[in-house]
Image (cartoon, rainbow, N blue to C red; front, top):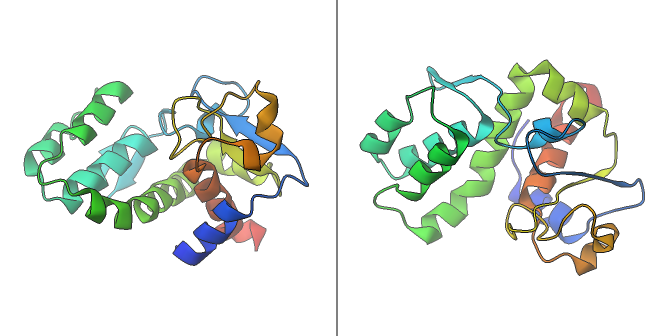
Amino acid sequence: MSFSFAKYQSLKNHPDTTNGVVSFWHETEPDYGIFSNWAPTPLFYDNRQFSSSEHLFMYMKAKLFDDTSVIKLLENQNLAQFEIKKLGRQVQNFKQETWDKHKYYFMYVALLTKAEQTPEFTTTLQNTKNTLIVEASPRDTIWGIGIKASDPRIETPANWLGENALGTLLMMVRDDLPNNK
């Protein structure tokens, strides 16, 4: 299992709705909320414990920019998800160009770690079969599609306002799971 940016680009640029669309946004949603990075899924990575894939992702960001103070703050297991996201925005020595080169790979690793350590996540992901997975966040045009699940434009990727990076990476992880090969 390895990350390929070319595969990411191909999936992102050619979304296939033939088999339907599965959407999610909030971690509290009953069917697919576990796909949210804020879903409480304890993870172990780099000899550390994290409360969610968002937590792990922000740790990777802080580590990339060698921000030991944010890394230390992220050791707190009782942080709320919005606090974790806020710490990620406070990373020192941040360079957007550097981050853009690493963020998709880091998210792939966080999601793959989640799949390896969270059976409920893995089963839910595998059960989507070949459907198109989208983060239906009306406020996020990078990780999401920029529109709500109730918006009829969700069925037509050309009408999306966002990139759907998270949905694309979830599909890549799904494809890389041992039972899907």
